[in-house]
Figure (cartoon, rainbow, N blue to C red):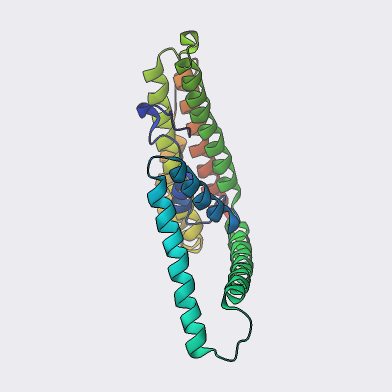
Length: 243
């Protein structure tokens, strides 16, 4: 989301963190490159240096660097007198070595999480994640449209904005409910298979779900959410039909 996002869009997007909590899986996990956060820190420091508090930031950064180096140099002289290379060179080597080891660890940790996701990725969950992407794309499109409007183009304003956002909130609720249902089914698969008779009524309730406002945008979004619920129902039926 852009920084200009309007207040009424806050909380509508389903974030990666929320997805991971709802599914209990590392959904959309990306490999952490340690240089990226360092670059971000560097950009923040440069930005502050260019601002009014520049001298203070320069002093703090320089003081931190010098203090850290002096402490490292003292430790080397006290506990590693056999090391002959300059302490500043040793510090650089250790930083590079530590960074390399950390990156390798992050890579294998990321690969392990991807394998866990692949192992637990059901067909219904794939469908739900695709619908979440489509839903988030709508939120992003509205945000971009708002920015265009704020740039001086009032003619692009969204008509009946409140109704559209209300429909999106309802769709979001259904997506969250469907993701929670899928997780329950996935994590309790063996129990469900042993106790299929307990879930007959739930299936009947899901089957009875209907949305009648098909001609409106509100109805279209709700029907998409209904399709998600029916996808989950279908997955439940498949689970109960297995032996």
